[in-house]
Length: 250
Image (cartoon, rainbow, N blue to C red; front, top):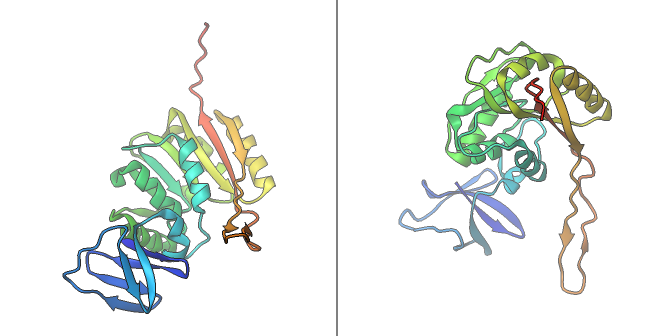
């Protein structure tokens, strides 16, 4: 899957089946055309540049259900999680799959991905978006997270986008390798406070909590300024590391 980018809008390009998706309109392309990133396609008088899929465009291109985690937040979440190629991860609260796609692009390990969501609709949207944007097939279990039972190999990271991530923290500790992290994403201060209290009671240390703010600019010669609209608050990102419990004298 590729994108067609212009300042007037971004379209989805199925480069394998040679189809352009513009809203509900589907445009069939010449089947013999060879398309590469950086090429320009003119459509209805607008010049679009062909791009490889970039997660920053998910809000414009992906099927939406629940509220999504932004590209800025996703990038930071991944950077502090310590995951990489081949990592085994669990995500609960998959929503529309925006973070899921970024996680899988980092691990390149769909068989090592464990998804959990209480909504069958969200599960279906997540799997569809992951397939569209990564080509990977994943499974998402339908379950309340505090009732979910994981029995696979120990995990390299856990990602939780839900209002009460602490409700099965003792289970999370069993599932996670020592020294690895749980990342939570919460909208309210009281949730952040309760989460820290419960994780610290159950063998984790709190590393940090922060919020990422971004301000886009309108760049015009002699008239560059910040955009007058934007998102002020998304969510608070917290990271917790599982401690081993061992004490070693230096």
